[in-house]
Image 1 (cartoon, rainbow, N blue to C red):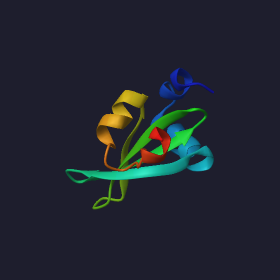
Image 2: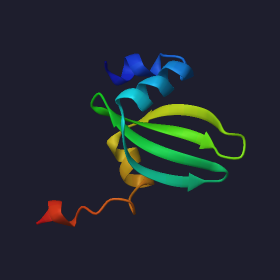
Image 3: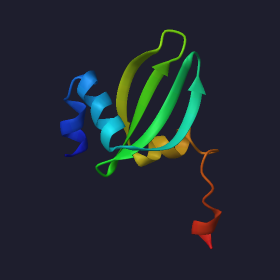
Length: 82
C-alpha cells in the first residue's frame, strides 16, 4: 500500500489500518486535539483525537518536511549527526 492509496480510504478504514499496522512514534497537543504520529507501510500518518468526546476527527498523511517542522522537539537526532 502506498500513501496515495491510503489517502483515498474512508476514515474508518484509515483508523483500522493505522491501529492494526502502524507504530506510534510521537504525539503532540493542539487546541483540544491529542495528535498521534504513526509510521506504517513506509509513510507517516497522524490520528487527530478529541479526548472530551472520545472521537477520532481525522487521519492524514504527512511528508518528512512536515514532520520535522511539527515534531522538531520530539526527536533527538544528535546521534545521527555524529
